Amino acid sequence: MKKRVLSLLLAAVLAIGMLPSAFAGYENFNAQATYTAGQFTDVPETAWYAQNVRTAYEYGLINGQSATTFAPDSSLTVAEAVKLAASLHSIYHTGSADFASSSPWYQTYVDYALQNGILSAARSDYTSPATRAVFASVLAAALPSEALTAINTVADGAIPDVSESASYADAVYLLYRAGVLTGSDSSGSFQPDSTIRRSEAAAIVTRMADPSLRQSITLTETQTALTADEIYDRCLPAVFKLSSYNARGELLGMGSGVVIAANGDAVTCGHIVNGVSRLVAEMSDGIKREVKVYDLNADADIAYIRVIGSNMPYLETSGQVQAGDKVYALGYPGGGDAKVTEGTVTDPANGDYLLPMIESTAAVISGNSGGALVNSRGELVGITVSSQANGSPSFSVPISEVDSMDGSAAVSPSEYTSTHMPDASRCYTDLYPVPDFGTVTGVPLFATTRDRGTTQFYYRMADMTNSDRLLLEYYAALGENTFYQFSEGAFTSSAGYLLSVQLYETTYQGEQVLGVFVSGMQTVTVGGLPRAAVVFYTGLPRVQGIVHGVPQHAKNPAYQYHFTK
Image 1 (cartoon, rainbow, N blue to C red):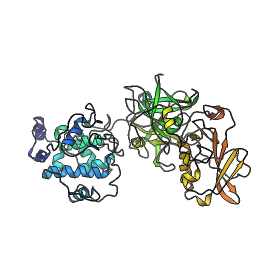
Image 2 (tube, helix red, strand yellow; image 1 turned 180 degrees about the horizontal axis):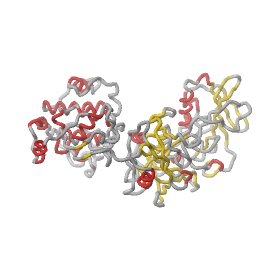
Image 3 (cartoon, one colour; image 1 turned 135 degrees about the horizontal axis):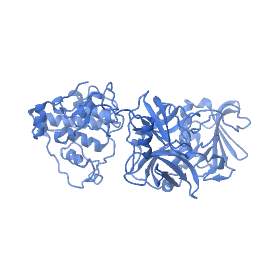
Image 4 (tube, helix red, strand yellow; image 1 turned 135 degrees about the vertical axis):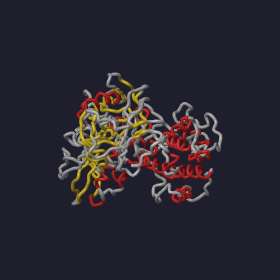
C-alpha cells in the first residue's frame, strides 16, 4: 500500500496558512452562488454538516433536491458520485464545470471520468445507491496525488473494517491520510458497505475542494479485541429488554433491542413490534421507557424504533463482517437477565432467507431476538433474529439494512398499527387478514375445501418453481399481516385476529400439493394469542421438523417454519 508522508517543509507551509504552488488548482474553487441562512429547511444551522452544505452549494458542486430542501439523509447514487468527481476534476484543472447535456443525464460525466482516469472502466450500476467504498474510490481519483498530500498518521491496517487487500483500500487510506475521511467512530471504522448520504458527501467534497476544512486524526494500530466480559460491560447499557402489549394492556411477549444513537433510535425484531399497541423498553439500569415506531421490514423481520429519552448509551455500528470474525450475541433470553454468548462468523451472507443473513456459532435462544450481534471491538454488526433448535448456528440481520428504512417520523405502536393495516386485496376472501398464497407468489390455486371450520387451499408443487423462495415470500407476507409462529404449530396474529394458519406438504386428488389451512381459533386468547402460544418472541422462520396435528390425508413431512427455540 502506498503511504503519503507529509514533509516537514509542507507542514510548515500549511501551519502558516499558505498554499504551495502544487495546490494552485484550489484557487479555481470560488463561490458560484449565494447561500442564505435557512435556505434549506432540513439543514439546521447547528447540524455538523451545515457549513459543508453551504460551501458545496456555493461552489456549485451539490444543489438541493428542491429550492428549499437538501435531503441530507438521502443516499447518493453512483452516477451522482461520478458527477461530483468529474466536477471536482474539471474545476481544479480548468476553473469550470461546464458539461454538455446528455441522455441519460449522467453520460456526459461518465465519459469525462473515463477520459480522465477517474473511472478505469464503465459501470452498470449508475442508478444504484453508492456505497462508501465506491464513493471513496471515485472521489480519490478526482484530484492529483499532490493535491491529497498526507496530513495524518494512519498506519497500514489501522482502519479496522478496511482490509488491506480490498480493491478500495488504497483510495480509503489516501483520503484518511489527507484528512478528507475521518471514520465513523472512535476506532476509525469506515463502514465501506454502507451507502453514502448527501450530508456526508457534502462534507467530503468540500474537504476535497478546500484543504483548510480537512480533519486531523491519528490511527496507529487496530483496536485490541475485547473479551466477553468486556463486551458485556461495554455494550449492555445500550441493549434493553422489550415488552409488547395489546390494547387491553395484556402482555403479548418479550424480546430484546439495541440503541444505535444518543437520541434513542434503536432496532429490534419486526415480530415484536408488528400489530401491538404498546412497547416498553427496560434498560440495563432498570429504568422503563416508552417506545415509538419508525418503520418495519417484514422481509428481514426487523423494526426501526425510538426509545424515548436523550443522551442515551448506544452502540457504534459496522457494516464490515467477514467469515472467521469473532462475534458476541447479547440480549435477554427468556425475558430474564442479560447474557452474552461468544461465537464465530461462519457465513457473512447466508442466502437461506429473502435477504442475506450473518450466520454465526454464537448461541441465540428465546428472548434474544432483536438483541445485538457485536464484533470483537464492541461494534454492532447485526440484529439477532433466528437460530436452529439448539441455539446455534444463529442468524442475524446485517445492521446496514437499517439504512434503507424510513426514520423520518416515529409514532406510537398503536398509531403505527392503525395506519399499517393489512391490504385486503392480498388476502383470502372472508379470511382477512390471512394473505392469499396465490396472490403473493403467483402460483395458481389447484383446489379448495372446507372441513369443520377450517378452509384448505391447495397449490400443486409442480406449479412451484423455486419452492423454498416462494415459501419465504409467503412467510414474509404472513409476518407483514401480523401472523407469526410463536410456538410449534400454527401461525397466529400478534394483533389479535382470531384465525390461525398452518402449511402442509401433502397429496390431494393424486397430486403433490402445498396446503394452506386457515382455521378459526377456538381457544381462550391472551393478548390476541392462544394462551399456549404466549411465549417469548424469537426469530425468523426456517424449514425444520414436522407439523403436529396433520389432517388425516396430510401424511407427508410438512413445511415447519418456527422461531428460535
